[in-house]
Structure formats: structure tokens, C-alpha cells
Image 1: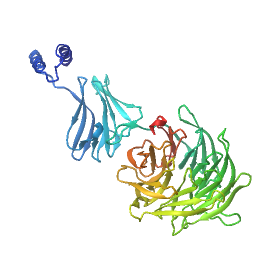
Image 2: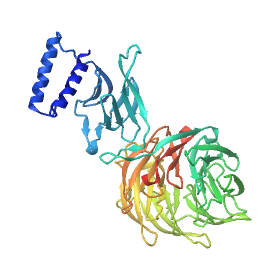
Image 3: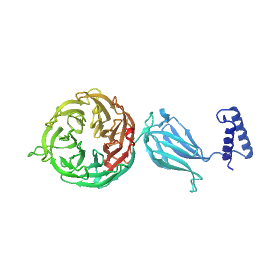
Image 4: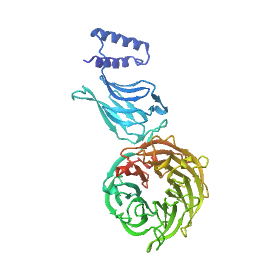
Length: 522
């Protein structure tokens, strides 16, 4: 019998007789020493435990090694000062750390992990916001692996761990869809009841229509609308609050295109196109974002070029689109305008402009659709540096706070938080920049349906950041990020029940479906 197996059998027997054994009991230690002496006399020498390295991290100041011993025990060995213990049982290595197993690089950059489970035969490690991996001892006859080999398995779960915080639930990718329909996809939109998902792809000049499976959240391709004239350079698609219409803005055709939507089949029927007042030369120069009024009667289109502006277009069911106004704001506040969001309860719009470095409050008349500037916040004012390169903007579901991103085309990679006053104006609350590792090139931003999470599409960082949100104060804190197959994350939308997240990966020509667990997670 193997000497170590014999030792384990004897020590198990002694635990029954002496519960204090191996816990500091003097008699237990004396008994154990006697056993070792006897075993040493039985052989010429006690064999050295054979070690197989499971994984190794390296930093500038040291190594951290997880080792597996041939007798079936896992061991955690710490070396060097590059490893730091954080609260909540999390470990962190320096920013230059790497994780490798059999030459396969899995993680680059900052490494935060937790040993979730450690047993004689199994070790499960959670790498911050990435999936867990299980290392299991198996009997193997493969040459070079030895009898006690290591099997690495991905553990499917939804736990995400914030640095220094209690573990929370997280999203998990369940589907990746690609194809020519999604060539250069930058926008996704979910129907009000969650039955259909729509995409806009600027390279393909195409709108994609997908049906959603309610049980799995996965998408099934239904139809593609391709029109190189009307849909050239389609960059953003939005649905009206009631789901009757779909509006698409195009940077190639320089228009806003309106479609009638069939709620039962999800199909779209072309209605009209607008680029400026009837009978006049096209006014749009760089339209790139659109929003509906709360009653679905008006469209508000953001134009970035020529000093920028916000156009109002009325939707007439039997006549199509009717031009109302082109508001250029004051002092160039709309220059480089890129994002627009509507307040859920008030006739107010919020517009972010990357060149002007501003966030503008724009009121609109529910009867005429005309707009007027009520407030402009500038990055040069006090603590408002988060508006440098302001790009995306979103309002939380209860309408109490507004959130901005930046950095997609220059400026700061920051998230700004603003409180909405009773009159709909904004008051600065928070700027978050240095606490978001890897989130570069902030694009679209969205708040979960129950307001507990804020998602940030980081195009240059190839990730979507997950921020925990305090519902009372509106402040956010970094929880982690989603990065699997996320090249050029640009657009994102959340299903009506808050369970599924749909992300447009522009540089990967794909959309990703993430399962965020139950609605209570958000």
C-alpha cells in the first residue's frame, strides 16, 4: 500500500479516538510523531511529494503558484509581495500579471480572483468577473501527464465578484450571432414585450429582425432589410414606446427613416424618410442618434456636424414625416452631439456632445414638438471634467438620475452621474474615471430596469462595464466587466424583464446575448 494512503487511513482512525488530533492536542501530536518515526523505519526514507504545477501568476515582484500534489492534495502557495489579500477573501496581483496553463494565456492585465472551493480532489477559482475554472484530479494514462493528471473545466455560474465586496450575480453569455446582416452592427433595440430584437449595421446598410425565445433568451434570425439608398450607414435604431414604429438614422444617406411595425410578426414596413424641410436641400450632415417622444408622436434626431443640432420631426400616421424644427442651441452646445435620452415622465431631452464637451437639457412642447434649451453643463465648469468627450447618455427608469459616458472619440473615459431636479434640470453628483479598469472608449450606456446596475459599452476596451448603482443616491461603483467576444462593443439594450442584455460588437460583426439571471439580480 502507498505509504501516504496508509498514513491517511491511520490518521482517520486516530481522529475517532482523539478528536483533538491535528488541532493542537498534545497527545495527538505525539502520536503523529510516533507514526512518522515508525513509517521512516519501515522504509529507507520518506519519499518526497511529487508536485505538478496547476497554474502560476507572475508579477514584477514575485510569483504566485497553485500546486497539486501527487497524493491527491491541492496546495495554495504564496511567494513574493506581488500578491495582495483584499477583503472578502479576494486576492489581487499587480497590473502586469498573467495567468497561464499549459502555455494558454487566459487573462491579461489586472487579476483579481477568489478560491471558491478547495477539496482534496477539486479546486475552483473565480477570476474576478470572469467564469470560474475547476481543476479536478483525474486518473490518466496519457503519456507525460502521469497517473494523477489535472483536468481544467469551465464552471458555468452567474456569480460575479466585486473587488472587496460580497459576491453578486452576473451576466453569462448564452449566444453569439454573426453574419453579413451584422457587418458593422452598432445598435440593438428590444420590442416593448421582449418578443423581437432589432439591429442596425452601418457597413451592411441593413436592419436585422430577430425573434426571441422566452425560455432561453436566444435569438432566431427572421429577416433582413437591406437598402443601400435609404439605409446607407445605418448607425442607430430605436422603437417607439408603444412599439408601433421603428426609426433608423443613417450617416451615409444622412436621413432618418421611419418604419411601421407589426407587433404580432415583428416585421417592418417602410413609411417615410426625412432629411430636412420639405422642398429644401437636405439639412442633416451627420445624424447619429434618435429618440421618440413619450407619446410616440415626435422624433428627435441628433446631428453632430455643422455646429450640431437637434431636429424635431412629427409622425403623421397617414402622411409620414413632417419637419418641425432644427434647434442649433446656443454657443455651439450641440457641436459633435452624439447621444440623446428622453426623461420617462417629463417632456425633457438630454443631449451629450463630444466636441462641445457638454450635457444639454432640452425641453419640448408636447403639442407642437418644438424644443428649447433649458440648461447646458460644460466640462470646463468645476467638477464636470467627466463631460470631456461626452458620448452616451441615459436616464434611470424612475427619472431621478442621468448618466453619461465618454472617450469613444477622445476625451475622458469617465462616467458622470447627475441628479434631476423637480424642474428637470441637472445637478452634478459623481464623476467616475480611474476606478474602471479596461473601460476605454465609452459609447452607449444603459440602466437596468430596476435601477440596480448601469452598463457601459467600452468600444476601445472591447468590453461592457458593469456598475453597481445606489438607488437612493444615484452613485455608482465598479463591479466588473463583460469581455468575452466583445470586440468593439458599441450598442446595448436590455429586455423588458431585465433578464437579457443584447450587445452589438461592431468590430466583431456580431451581437451577443447575455443572461443576467433573474430580475432581482439587477
